[in-house]
Image 1 (cartoon, rainbow, N blue to C red):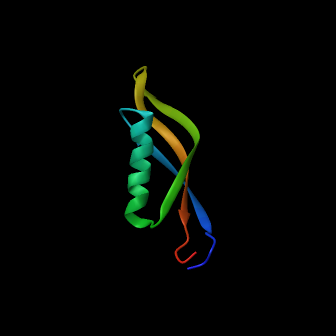
Image 2: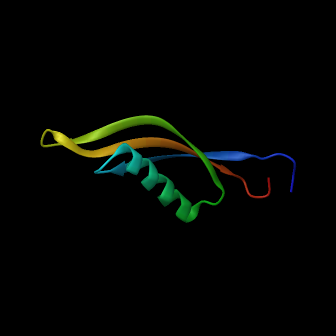
Image 3: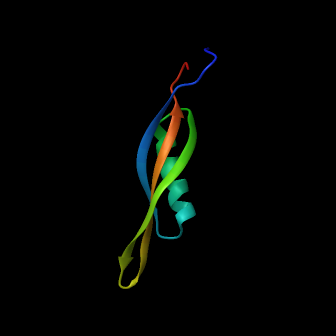
Amino acid sequence: MSDHHTYKKLEVVGSSKNSIDEAIRNAIQECAVTVKNLEWFEVVETRGHIVHDQVGHFQVTLKIGFRIEGS
């Protein structure tokens, strides 16, 4: 193992009918299914979908950082 780490970033959009927090958690949980070594996230955009004059979904764009294996 080296004495430094190298990371890569993914950009994903999570959504939830309930909250921004749940949208973030949904996105991270889905990424964790196929991506190893998740380390951090950054919220870069928050928006929503309106249905019948009400919030239909919260949508959150995240940059998720993961450590490249072996670094």
